[in-house]
Image: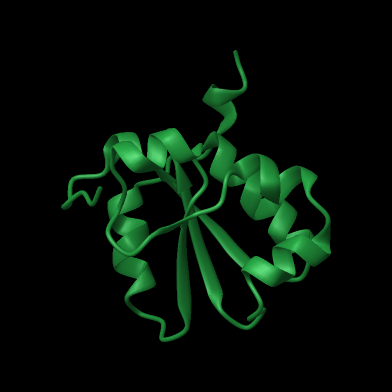
Length: 110
């Protein structure tokens, strides 16, 4: 039994539908910049997961100044976004992992 088998089943498409229920939201793709440039969910901003996990809080607060916003995060499989969301929650953000781009069925922006 490996790490990925312990992750909860997340559906990015359902997460994006849930996001529509809130007014003040931010969608973050935590994949590496090269992955983001190959295609991402329209409207997503790119913040590499490593920045969320390893950077200091001051740098994150410059990128995400509104701590009242609900933050929805995804990566390729949901693993990196899970770690990044947990890190942001420790910093006082309302961050949620919505899963992996690999399961996304909507339009893609480049």
